[in-house]
Length: 184
Length: 402
Image 1: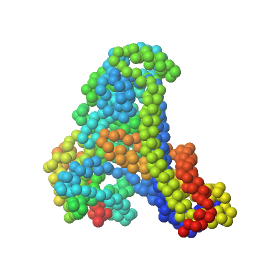
Image 2: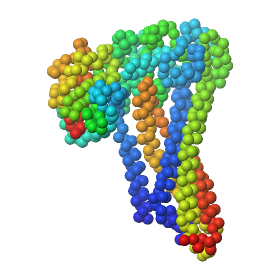
Image 3: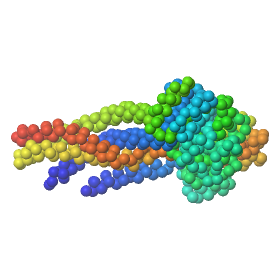
Image 4: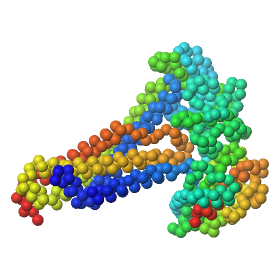
């Protein structure tokens, strides 16, 4: 009977874990093209793994204070894509979806091991102007979580598209802060 | 000691071997259950989608009618269009309650696919179960500008929480083909169909976006008497440059396609189950060989051939039963997770529209019972030979065995 109880416990754990794993899924911004972005951000990198991070109430408060707004209700976890070159970690990629002037703006950010941005790419948006203009995105390179990353302060917007530019800047800032708080 | 307890004791004596055999059955049963329930869920969802269209006959441009129907359901660029002359001829027919022309086409971009549905008041009358979120409105004959988003489209495009966020008027969506934004005038409540992924615009605006003035891609008809679908379909077939599909034809074809896919998948699962059955046979047979002396003692102390046969058969039954139940528990508890994984995988496929509201896997007690009975039947079959072999052992010869 003792052996049987053990099996029941194991079975219960399996079932419980399956349900817990199911409920952990949230509406996240899917990384559409990892191959392209890894090639651009970390040339020579050959693989990546996904690290799912949840946050505590305390961490949530810290993130919200630093980004100046609340986390989205669906954002109950963050995905850190750890990029490797010959099995050695070279950096991390995170994605975020913000609201632009005309809908969703999905931003992909590559962060080096030194906590500095190595590249930013807007993978999906419906703004009337290309948000991937090199002169605009180049401004984010080298930024860290301690920089303001705000349009009008240290980021010049794409001319005539302040709101769209701010959506990208906000996503980058949020990603850096989340990486700073949860990523280590 | 009862037969059941004796059989249980024999199985638990070799825990690892028994456990692995049970696990192999459980995995095969899980796969069988999940595939059957996914198949059932998908069939039901497809049927629901077709019935919810509220349409008895579809008129589409010439070509493969089922390809056109598939395009209508999944979104895509139609290969041909219907002109205004055809619309006038259809309108002249009697027995039609609602004739709703539609212009559906997709624009595939590097990062997304926008599926537009151009329509007028007749489509809104046809789909009278459509509901808009509070504060939204449809375009009217007087107001021919604006866009209504399907619930999934709104979720993706506006970064809103579908359940909690209300519709906020005043938002806009940029349409590069018009080189101007369109005001979002409403958001459709989830319908559980492909409708959730579309952008609804007035017919003329859709024709303008795709530069096809006066053209439509489909005419949906609701008849006064659905039983007349065949007769009216025949009349429509006589028109030049049209293809006619009745809903019963479409449903029949889709079901035949589903059946073919199901048979293919079942064939693969049955191979897995056959392998598991051989595993069961091997486990029980090995156990019989190892217990030759024990069986000899049983026979020498008065147990009959039928007793030995029953005992070995019971062990097989217990093993397959446990594997079956474990497999079903895993499958039922994990089907939600599987569904999410499948949806997550499908959303990664470029240009794939995934209906996140309809349930992919459908729980059906009949599938549970059927799967369990099936696996028990397989187990009983697999147990016949070892049980027969064990019962045939002569006590004296068995006792001589070292």
